[in-house]
Length: 85
Image 1: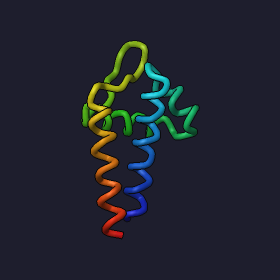
Image 2: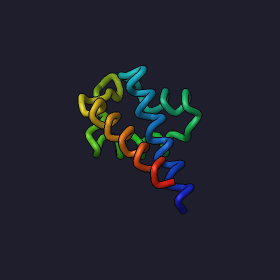
Image 3: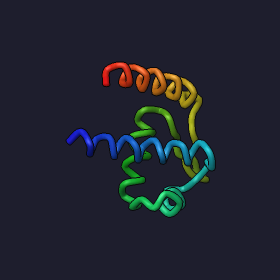
Image 4: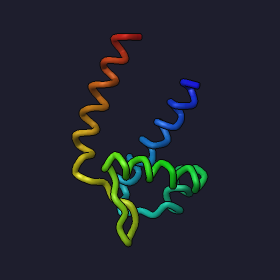
């Protein structure tokens, strides 16, 4: 179960990284570039939008200004996990 959750988190992060690098970018292009099924990309984009990390535009998804804070928070979380493990 934990492995599955980590796979989903990894997918969300890959989608976020691609949107950050190539945005605005559409769902189908993300799907093709990452070789992830479109419905999974759609779900990841929804999750990222709910977290206010990406937002939809007519040209495709783009990152928001919250991405910088998220990156710092994620790095801190990873350091905490390293200490635990």
